[in-house]
Length: 216
Image: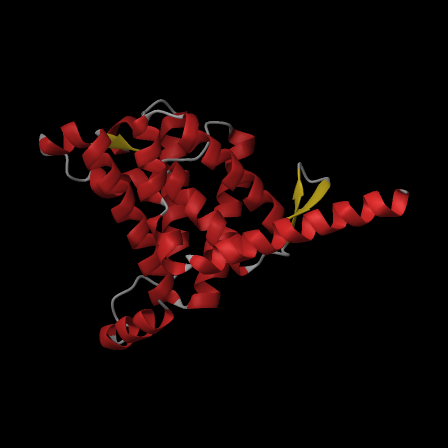
């Protein structure tokens, strides 16, 4: 996969990308949130529904990425800062071209899912950013509720367990949405992510076994 990315980036000559992409995405989310807050209800015009796209509202194929992740004023500040932080860190690590490509594949995946189910949100697309950041910076630590320090790898593992559960027990539109929206994670990380998860789970089991033996 890395060789393919290198070749694609070389052919593109690093011209076909939007620098600081996450600034525009987070800024768009903030604008939509404020419009909703004052009663304009912009989200109703932005969400992705293929029936409405077929009627000519083709802007929804892109505007759904600007849907705010929360309706709470307090939570939206934290959410937007968090998404800006992880997006900016990924772009710094990969370069603008690769980050744009990662996000574009996520958008395409969400659209493909919507073609099957009829609609899509940016929830799983946002999740893909979070998982990518956790894969790149597993030991990065954040404060839950500004109090509890937790490393990104544990949050990512908890999210993966949750979404595997949702995939197994959810409806088929939920399964399609999860599967297609995380195509970018699978393409960029694939076996590396699975190896990391197995390694962390093995470490946890060894620590638990050591504690049990120590107590004896």
